[in-house]
Length: 332
Image (cartoon, rainbow, N blue to C red; front, side):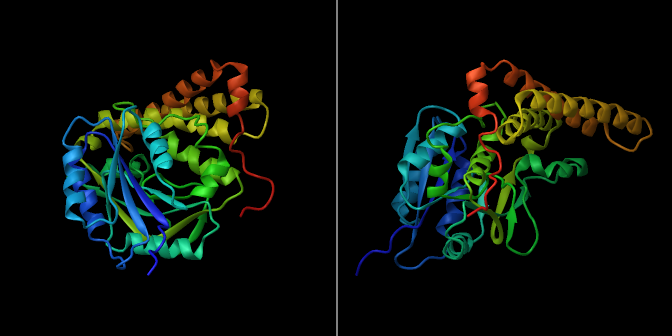
């Protein structure tokens, strides 16, 4: 009998995170599938120096994950790792699962079902719930967006954007967006906590005329170690998020560059004024000082992003400006 075609390839980009990668692979080993599965798994070892190869090789030898394989990408950074995953795979759908994401036992089965019923959509993602290593301070939970938290109800729904954890992409849509040929935004690279790479992909797919969907049937638990719940970490990641937000604003801007600068500066001023207001509220014991510093860090990041964009030469700026603006025509 002919072999079932692979519809979905799951890519795990990992850098020096062998212990958590092992847990992620274990959840993939528990997935329900038919004797001829329609999915496979690729681990992109992004310049790791720990036991990552040995962990993956043990699962390959165990044979519990369909067609599991490993490639090494020497250039460190999430964007080059994801690009390598695109180049090394051929299935019509590609999922990016982080090396600290724990998939529900029916995640793959439900993803394949959603693909069958939404074949022409550009991308989709599911529930991402935070799995704290230790209970964090209550104020940390207010920054779920910094940890890719995503939950938009109990029904399938169209979305304007999606988080990168568990993001499933239509290869045709990704290729039509131009992202595999040219990437503009940076993403995680070692200690550099940027997060614009996944946002660029979904925004450019949407700009290419495709719909973005959320489905509650694909559930992931995103493991958050204690070291990522410190004030220092939240300051760093919100600074990076501020930079990424400014660049994403440039990608979708549909007016002249001068109006983008005015709007960006207005957003920064508004952010600083909000910080002053919140400082007064802090004096009245209505907010914690940690939250004020985190919000200020985000605004500082937005200003840093504006400075980066201002330094671009005119040709590069014109290339990026509005390259992911929402299409006027109806979406696919």
